[in-house]
Amino acid sequence: MPLYLQIILIVAVFLAFLFIILYMGGLAVRKTCFKIIAEMEEARADKEARAIKIQDERKNFFRVGTKNIRPKALNLLMADGLVIKTNNGKYYLDKAKLAQAKAQLYSKT
Image (cartoon, rainbow, N blue to C red):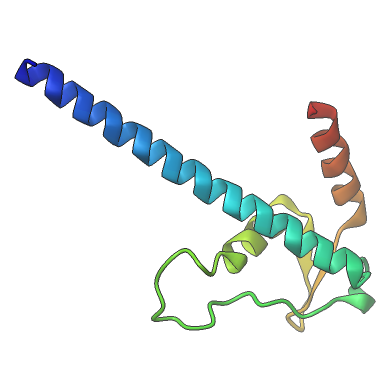
């Protein structure tokens, strides 16, 4: 096999591997987002008065890895406006935005 073909093959395999890893990471964050929403719906945290405390920081700063993606998922939910943080550090769901997001999600399937 020629050298240039080997280089192209190695680059293609590396890019495929990178794509798979990033895709799996995205699926993990999505799954965690759904878990957070389910937890908040179970606690009926849909108003500021019913806001609940959620882990929004890493438990151990020196522990590096992909195990603790809950803070990242919570930040994504806040960026989308589905979850709102109160002044005292608790969180609640925005029911209107959540209903809109669910309708958009189910219309794709």
